[in-house]
Image (cartoon, rainbow, N blue to C red):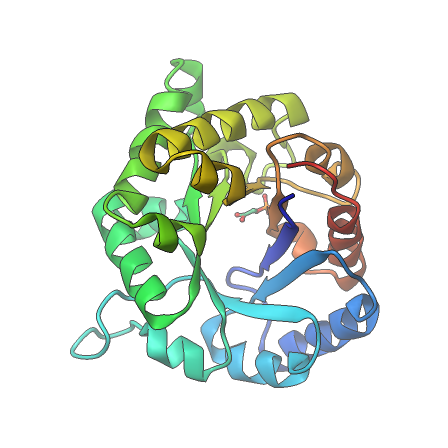
Length: 256
Ligand code: PGA
């Protein structure tokens, strides 16, 4: 059975003091929660501080992006090694906000996924269709292209170390989550694609998170779906109580 994984994407929110306060609250609230992997992804300048607070707790730390090169003249970028030394175990890659506002391409995402895996970071690889693409009936085509683009060429062993996040762009930050059935349909499709790429062993083991307006109210019904193995949470991860409630829903997940 796949263990659920709930990650909080703090995006461009929280100063260092605020981030540390939130991490402390989460550590206290989630210390005794089991059977679920939990991760927070704060902004770069707060990673070391948050990692320090969460050391020895069950909560992992991730970044929201990274560069594929290991060092050099890339103003404004950070490397996998920098993230590792700041205490990260995970990194979100290919988030739709990066694709939309910062010109990230499938090929760039693939290079980052390869670099993350090589360094020992667990990539959380995001795919998802825009509203116009869904309305045009192109959802499967769009997410298939993104997934193939991001993981094409990886070995089965590498793919097994990654996590996929299905995040329909129209559901992010809108308060309009996909219905559990609608989300599960895409998750099942993505799993079928993984099966085609790497066989049953990989397809049945890789975890696929859902993201897009996940709240403490809708988390349980989403996480009950057969192919939904966790959540990538934006807005609701900024408040300790609501993120903790979503994590608890994850700990009761019985799917997969
Ligand atoms: P949201 O964001 O939960 O605020 O919709 C999710 C995400 O972008 O990862």
